[in-house]
Length: 322
Image 1: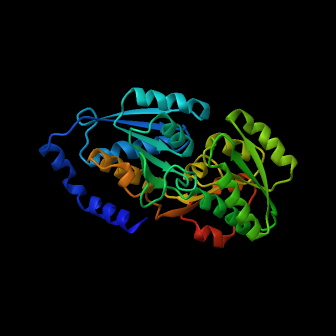
Image 2: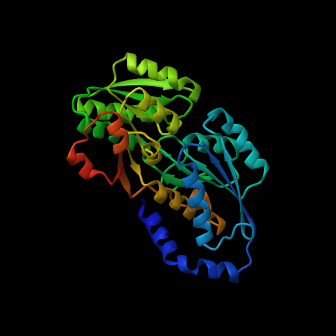
Image 3: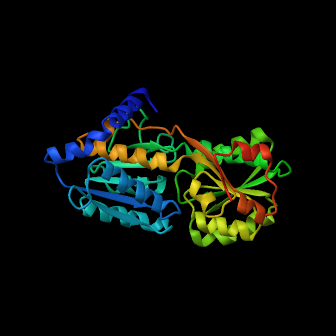
């Protein structure tokens, strides 16, 4: 996080107790919050944090604010249509969770403020810089490329005999080249061969697993914008250790996840929505990077796969799901 962004965030936290009082004492325009989501396993947590965060800030649903949440249900091809619908609905702020949603929102409007909670917004061209985003987008960088690379490192420690890892990429997501770049760099550093396998839709994932198994990969790192439940279930069925950067992947049966704390990231997203509702311009509100990263290991999945997780790795984990 930039120094300016950190100071603003601390200042906002310091005034949190006063938000409900301000809400009662001032006239404010009724705000329509639109949200565009993929429909991954963490969608419910996102909805919860968005509603609760605004409520704690004094924005009462039905009185001060309404929510219009559109989910693609895992089908990325629906995102442009859903984004256009939110623009037609004239939402005051559009929140986009993950890069494909932010890209669809950006293509749908250059006027409505967009709060993007996405992989690497500078590297993928969504914003000009963290300090001065420019345009109508600001938000939270999840540093997902680096986190996916870290998944390779974790597998190197967890499964020392595995020397080939598949990287399951989402070719419909503009983040994929950066995902593959960081995974390959981590693989090279660890002496692990990375085998890229890409899909364009959820319908192609089953066939991708056949390719992965045929290629002899001993583990899998999944790009976070793919359907978590589908990949976790197939990985378990095929007895393939799998990881990703979203905590929800481990929660729905994936072996492990390494990435930013989802709750913290979603709460940060609420901060940007509030700043915009208070009159801030996205171009001038510095974007932030996560400060909390966590390793989550699903021990139940490990047992189903017949894996013995090293005690040293379990000790490093922020949470072990049993």
